[in-house]
Amino acid sequence: MLQLFNAIQVKFDGHTDLSNSVTELSLFRASRDASYPYIVYFPHSGSPHFALGVDDMEKVYIQFSIFSSTSDYYEVMHIYELLTSVFDNCDMPMDDWNLIYMHRISNFLAQDDSGKKVIWHYMVDYELDIDAHPYLTTTVSP
Image (cartoon, rainbow, N blue to C red; front, side, top):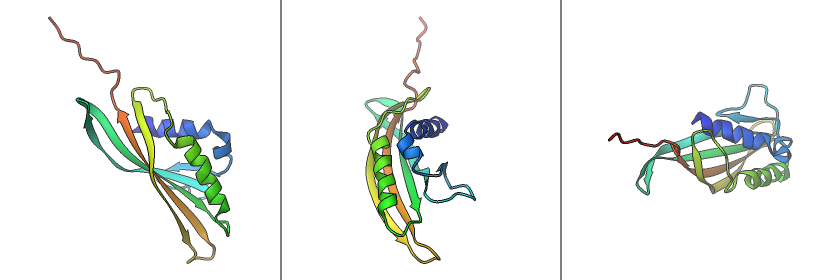
């Protein structure tokens, strides 16, 4: 899973429009001193997936959460468009894994105005199919 997390960070860092639009991309939770807008991502589900007779597949669901504190939704929508332009059906090279696909499967925009300021939260879910050992070969001895 660390290979996937590293690949996401490299992909994010390689797209300056996206990386310059937020203060940080964080795994699991934002830093204590994070300022808006920022993105947090985490796997919310993962399981072995057996397809095409291959038993080293992984199906992973990742959620990106975009947070913004502007009074309107334009900033969070702009970041959403940048995020999806980078990650929808993308290719992410990994050392020992092979990303088969990364499809956006849902997204949901919510507003929390219960505190002192309005917080926009855009949740974007992706489904990934990963060949966890594409270079693993079996040698049969005579």
